[in-house]
Amino acid sequence: MVENSLMINEDKTEFIILRKSHTLKKIEHPLTIDFGREVLKHLKCSGEKGKALGAKSGRTLGVLIDNHLILERQLGNVKRTCFLMNKNLWSVSKALDNVTRLLLVMQLVISRAHFCNILYYDLPWCRLKTLNSMLNQSIRFVFGIHDKRVKLLPY
Image (cartoon, rainbow, N blue to C red; front, top):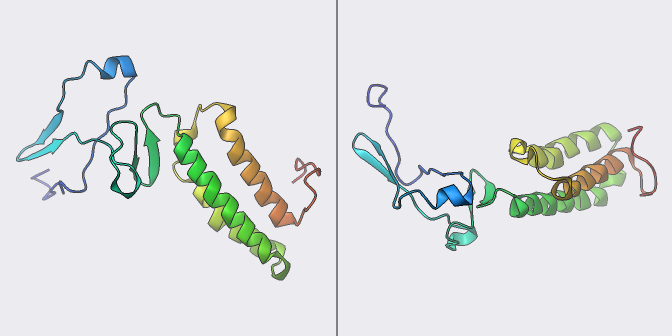
């Protein structure tokens, strides 16, 4: 890193260890990583608003990660913000045409649902069905479908 004139900002640089719980107990604490003169220390994950949560959950790159990688808090946060965005879009729906509705849904709802979506891979359906219902609500908004009994398969 010295050859490329790069430096580590100790205040912003973090590392995370993802392992099964029984193998994580075998790791010696405290953990450090040496980069020449810079030393990164393992810190406890901090939750929202600086509350220390131990190793149970934390936020990194805008994603709420927990110690078992079940992403309950992350999915709940995405669901809450997207449903609120859909609710706000419905309130102005009469003044918008279909193209504008589609653009708004893509920019305001789907972009939030797809942020770091690789983390959702291989999660059980019971966790992902809330995202599916949120996307169905977005489809109903784009095409102006008010009846929830209408099948969305053709859309």
